[in-house]
Length: 81
Image (cartoon, rainbow, N blue to C red; front, side, top):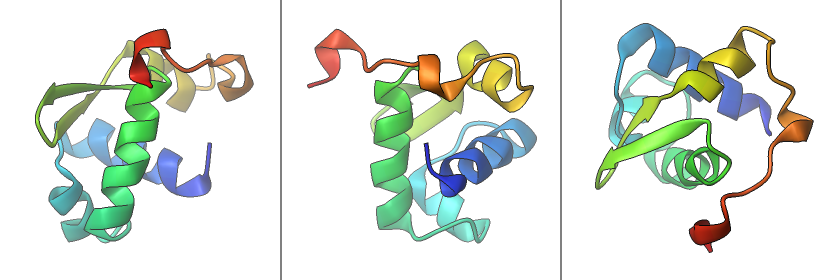
C-alpha cells in the first residue's frame, strides 16, 4: 500500500465509482498513475472493477479505511496475474 492508495479509496468513498481520469480530475494523482494503482487495489481485493476502466470501493476497501482491516493481511488474488 502506498499513501496515494488511501487517498484514491477515500475519494471513491466520498464520490462513488471512479475511472482513472476521474481520480485525476479530483487532483489525487495523474490518470496513468491512478490506472496502475486501481489495478493494484483490485488485485488485492480492495476495489472492484465493474467495467473496463471503472472501479468501485468494496467492503474490504471500506474496512481498510475504517481501520478494521490491516493491509499487511492482504494477498493478491490468484487469478490476477
